[in-house]
Image 1 (cartoon, one colour):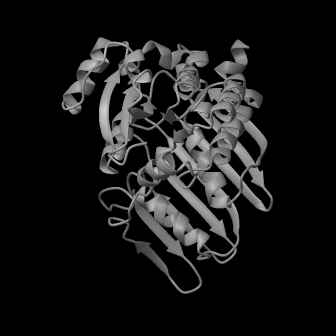
Image 2: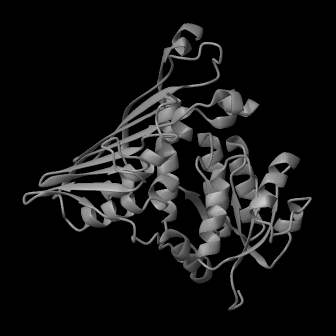
Length: 343
């Protein structure tokens, strides 16, 4: 690899997370070489945001360009793993929006190809990697600020905005199910804060309680996890009411033997404006910690890994184990509500 900037391209623009992925790589010093998607309307909108990058008519223009080292993607979830396999087989590293794949069979194939090629297959778990308060909370917890971690609870509520959703949003086999999709974030955070490579799925549930007209949509889900002495709960849903100021009141609670932290990721119902609210309670005090200057290290570390063939940003085992846990939870989930009635 040359000493110049690492070049990357984007394939698949179906989720708006792609904008954050591209922005993160650019901020870390990478060079944006172009983008492709089969949907003209997505290409047009994306081009307005990244006018300096060329629109490419075929993904082969990216895959067959030896100067491009990274492909980043946020296509339809069921299409992501097959694309990632093609990317790895073309000698490039892959940075994909969550979920990184939608079935255990896809995961097995990705693992096989990753082992064969030695390329990086990374999932961009943005609720951890792009949240300054979550990054700071992890530093505190890993530094022993709350003692031994006993429980991790993550909430991932989302606003449904159904009239604006594409057809695939309502097709279970295309988005992978609510646990596979949204709860990927919470499982990633559980492993990270527990300091564990893997965990056990104790129980899981999916449901459709609110939308009987869309039986392909799972609008509620939960997972119970355990890793050694650390317990976990993830709850996700599509119930965010219109009165909330943002798309979802994402929360993270980490309980330790000597204290606890809470992260209010995107808003604070207590009245403070903005995002990234972190609270720490320990044996001396309770306090709010300013996270506005916290650095987000992932993208720079990822580029370092591409250059050095290291695993400092995210180990391959962490990535695949987080995916396996959430896919296992999805496959084993008890079905409730309208899903149970339609089975």
